[in-house]
Length: 331
Image (cartoon, rainbow, N blue to C red; front, side):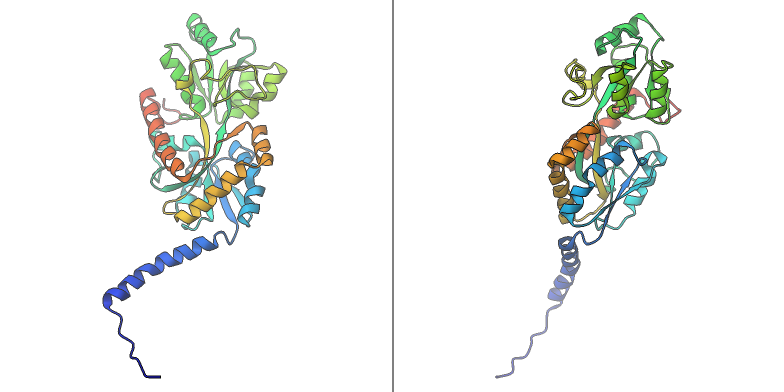
């Protein structure tokens, strides 16, 4: 066979080949994903609504992804501790964060060491956590209109549970106060549970509270539900109308539960996780678990997640500015 000399590769060809190596490496890594356990960091404590949400999906997610889901609660700093872990994590999809939509209010309330939009990759949406607007059982109030009328007739008589500035529980009632020009006094608490105890003892008169915390008290008659958040009535409270049904849909601030990753997470990994979450949310057993926690599944595509994250940040920013809300203890 005659010898054919190999032609030297041009400088341009060498550079082009070198430039494709990182892309090929990332593509190979994405194709093999996941090859080890996935850590889901939570900004809230074990037993909280985010913890319940991820544990409701974890076994179905693990079966689909072929790797276990490791839940890592890291409460502290209004979610900043968990956020810093994810921002600093490798862009490989093995450290992600399940959080709440109030996360996007943080930069309008306090200085945070990251950009809540630009430093994270929106991946998937679990759903919306339903909340119930409750009043003390002794009050003659059964609807939001009756609440407004009572507040006008009884100035300085109504104090509401505020588990943290910028939370839905705070923002919704501040909007009612300003929109209807009534007196509602914010009483700060470190979370919802201690406030619920004071509401039961009628040391405060109302609060917008995560449904699982109050359903038992409502059924027993210890509290009265006058409205529920979300797009539909709760099966557990079929006689209680939504905010929208009562004409107050424009004041509603829902508590959504999004999954985020570090900035620059490769698209194939984002799509893999998004698909796994969508599949899990369609599973009857998962839906039953979420329903028990009063979480309404709301899967989104990757494109929908990106748009939602930007819109939520802008919407909460406008609302907090309009209401003149500052960080906890300063409003």
